[in-house]
Amino acid sequence: MKIAQKCLVSLVLLVVTLSSVGATVAWEPYFGFSKGKSKIEDDRIPFYELSLGTPLSSRVSVESFIMAQPLLKFSENSNDGYTPDMDYAFAIITGVKTSLTHFKDATFNPMVQASFGQMLIASAESTENEPDFTWSFYSSIATGFELNLFEAFKILLLSGYRFAPHEQVLGIESNTLSTKFSSISFRATLD
Image (cartoon, rainbow, N blue to C red; front, side, top):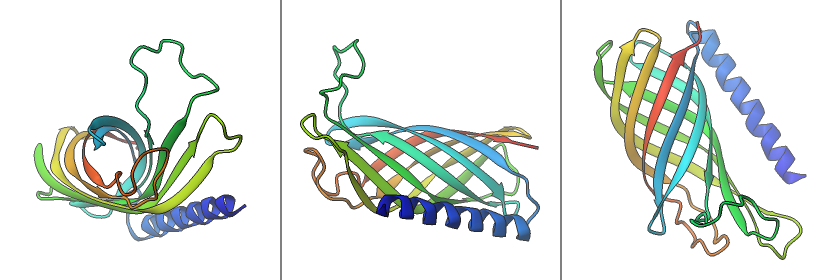
């Protein structure tokens, strides 16, 4: 029940944030997709992110995001896919991001991006019937470049550090998810 309450509170905060942003600026929404990697215990583990945002000014934008990342190393020889007796662990991260670009409108634009939110780590061992859920704080800071190829399409190349304190989960030491990351993002204006 506690998980459902936290999800509901996160959803309400997200709606309030986006509606207040929409009330103060011209609503010019964009949709984003990101793929990146972070180093977790000597392995480069991929993550995927979806985002919805709007510019606050010519140089500042704000967006809400949801990110998913598997936390256990996949078997290199397994072509069978998922097996019911497998251990699993993954992280779902939701929050708000703010991006600041150096120039108002440039093809190759340096930028900085900061985010904060909540991280849910779900894990289960093959001997357990129900998964364990762990909630923790999440924040990140990244720098990189925004490539403005077309008026309605942008590519972001970012590298940074994320702070994600957590407990030990299925052999992953505590605070291991606080690590460097790099990503490529694609933004498309929805107008």
